[in-house]
Image (tube, rainbow, N blue to C red; front, side):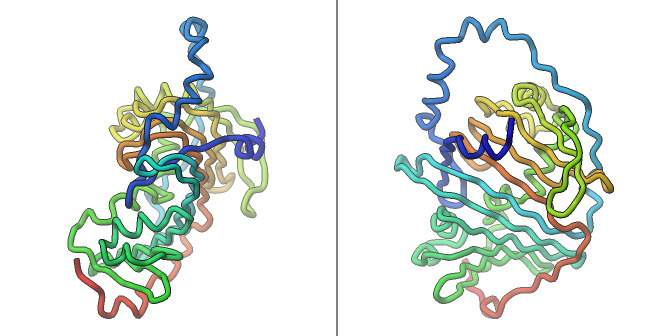
Length: 285
């Protein structure tokens, strides 16, 4: 199915509670109503063909990279209807420094959660999470940039879950990397192989995975549409992923329907990452 067409028609309930994305069960009721009458027929549906094994190079050996993840959302936040999006851009380098820049219309509550009540007074245009050798810093970019150095080691865990590499590694795990080769294409200036992953087969494989994180993700899903995976012809690295899911994602305390777009745009480019001037005297909390 044409990916652009699928994205243009899908309604994507998505929930964010503070720095986390939280699902609310009632959001997905339309998805269940479409299949409720066909329960008997679904029971006799044969197991979907997972397709061929997709050969992928590991991202574990990458010394630096640039990547982006985008989420489209429409659902409930704390029981209230909300519609918007989130985008996270990652840059990590060989000096052990990284930066995740988060933007989008649902950003305000995330900023308040990871930055504390003081940050919640601002309406940020973006939030930067810096991880450098001497610790973690959160920069809320508004009229006046505010830099916070959290005392808790887990303060940025929800945004870490939005890391493009973290999501891409899970969604292309060897346990679920099976699909149908569509052909070669050009994407982001690279020649890639385009594969389609059967949604039902992905769901079954994820639920049976020996990887605890992937298994938990699979067991919390209600359904998965066919996904598109793009693999660099030269390096064998997964460089792009497009998927639509319905269900819960426990690490982010999320329930509903959500669309994910991931792009690995730069490999071993050693992008510069340096703290801004606002972090010369950060707020500690």
